[in-house]
Image (cartoon, rainbow, N blue to C red; front, top):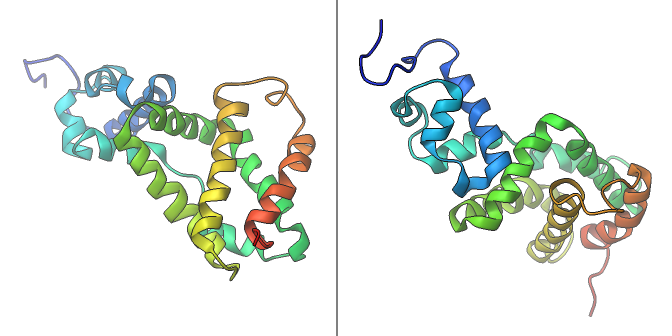
Length: 198
């Protein structure tokens, strides 16, 4: 039965999933500011009101669409599962393996693009990355200055992801995984478990 207003599909099975998929693509391609609710609704072939019904305001749709593929509680056992002197390398391989997978890369790229252009999105990403992902992982290592270490680590992973996967800056973008791991592992090692300085 048609609504008589927009000709778009009313809510039905699969609508929520189509909205999320359309939102992921829009946020990845256009960032937070450039992804309007109306455009996402058009891509998903639903009425814009249905997006509000399922998710509320755009900020909540963004968080739902990002669909983080990692949790800090999952990283902690990985970091402590081998020799302490190899913690940085384990973290580097884990982090890069997520970005090398095309599906999470689309959502994560959208996150970074959005953080650059929108203060609200940047605040959400700080919460997701620093508090929910890196915070628990660093805290589980039992090292001093965990808050400083989390922000230092965040500066490296965001910079690496931005240049290699979002801006595609060469030769970093096409460097082999082993090359990138070898270059970043010592810095990750220092930020994770070694003394930071006087």
